[in-house]
Amino acid sequence: MKTKTLKKDKINIITLGCSKNIVDSEELYSQLKANDFEVEHESEQDDANIVIINTCGFIDNAKEESINTIIRWAEAKQAGEIEKLYVTGCLSQRYKPDLEKEIPEVDQYFGTTHLPQLLKTVGADYKNELVGERLITTPSHYAYLKISEGCDRPCSFCAIPIMRGKHVSKSFEQIEAEVRGLVKNGTKELLLIAQDSTFYGLDLYGERKLAELLRRISDIEGVEWIRLHYAYPSQFPLDALEVMAERDNICKYIDIPLQHVSDNMLKTMRRGITRQRTEDLVKTIREKVPGIAIRTTLIAGHPGETQQDFEDLCEFVKNSRFDRLGIFTYSHEEGTHAGTLVDDVSAEVKEDRAAAIMEIQQTISAEVNKEKVGKIFKVLFDRKEGGYYIGRTEFDSPEVDNEVLVSAKDTYLRIGDFANVMIESAEDFDLYGKVIAQ
Image (tube, rainbow, N blue to C red; front, top):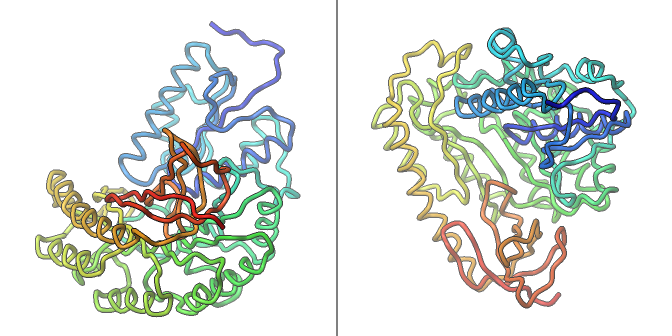
């Protein structure tokens, strides 16, 4: 059993869940570094004596992963492998009393807004002067940029307002300072994220200001790619599309979770939009930003989803031909509006419906990819793996979208650099090519 020594504390931060959690962990990481702590993010050495777990509490699978991770480290603490264990994030925010009762080995649980308290507990001071000086845990050439926190939308299935609170935008000045700090440290691509990015600015400036924010970030020297995530379809700010079309360093890409398309389900989900308006919006996005790649997310098996609703969704996916698509099976969440409804779609049917949608999308993705063969694309390279340099076009976000593979046998590339690549062949979700001289 490990015993307490006078050796300096070392902290290991473990992040679970979405990109928004990554940003929260990076802020924690930066604060600890500024307080002269030895700290690593998801260390492979297992030599830290303090572990902080940043949890996700959004859907069943994510909650299960978070709980299993807490238990794993609680057992490590009992075995004397670590001295202190702290838990923060969405799961802790939502279920703190239950967690304290069920896993008492954790020294303390913190919510999503308790960073100063967490820092104080480990012996650090919260430093306000760190705005714009965030240390990132992603590869240095890209970074997530959180433009707001929380959400005011009433979606039936979503527990985010419970865990993250009401929508709060960061100011233009705060975001610009952060961007300059990231660019100074070598970041080339900024992935704009929020619970609802299209709501940006309404609380601070009395109107939606996403278009102006995009212009301001685009004007900052050194920003080569800006990528927009998590746009909400209802009352979409169309002026943002004009900025996307006119600025070369704003990727022709948008992540807009539509969730469903049948009027019955959109009403039940409390999405504030109809099928016709959804189809019109997708058409408008493509008209105003020619060549744009649209990524969407759907839900299968929400309470009340009939076979006809599902067939309508299949038809919509076939006709819309989204460049990228993901689908979740519905997760019954207490505290949400849908949580008061009967979860009347079986787990088996949910899985079958999700698989059917992905089968449709696989065919579409393969066809879209084949259309790229013989064409040249600007590619940002993220890593080298298995004899290939692996990168992305402006139409692909890290972790979730397609990748471009270039053989490393006769080519040398630096990770984090751009190169022009001729696409030579295509698979369902990957492209293969060769670098073309600049």
